[in-house]
Length: 140
Length: 73
Image (cartoon, rainbow over all chains, first blue to last red; front, side, top):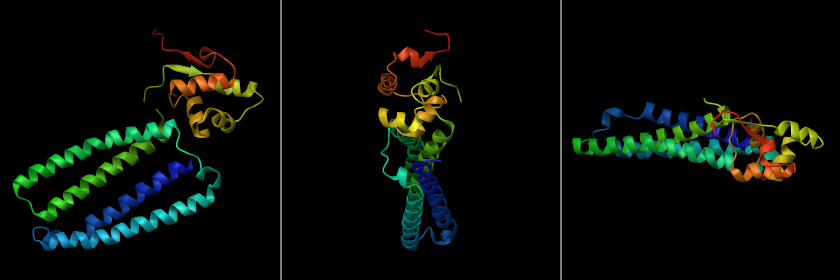
């Protein structure tokens, strides 16, 4: 497996684990109150730190083990897969935004809107990275 | 997943070119070893530019490297 593909796997697993934890431990019982916004802020701090630390450690470890591939630049196949991943990620992003717009008119709280936006971003990112990994494995 | 409508003889041509490795061909063409492997296996359709660069590496016309196979013109 190529270095770039391994990095994508690390990103996918790290994001799924970090935000999976976020949505599991979020205090949904206060999501209707202003305190729910601060709960989001309080949880996003450790999630962000965990992602940065995990990605840094994993990337350094993989770079040491794959020294020859570290400096290899993206080629047309990498760029093509990235573009297709971004294209597929656009759909959940649009759907999530539209759901959020309707829910705002419905009168949901700020914390729920915030969580809806975070979920939309996370799903879009997972689709993007997942698509790239699928294309690396299965091909064009 | 549908396969590509063309095959290629890159592996044979590499062998005939002094057993050139995928990495060496990739360096000469400007793509990674993994991309050359994917092209050889029919898992990636290269751009026209890369296809021409591969053919030029072997000093062959494009049709000697890539062959259209699905019967449609």
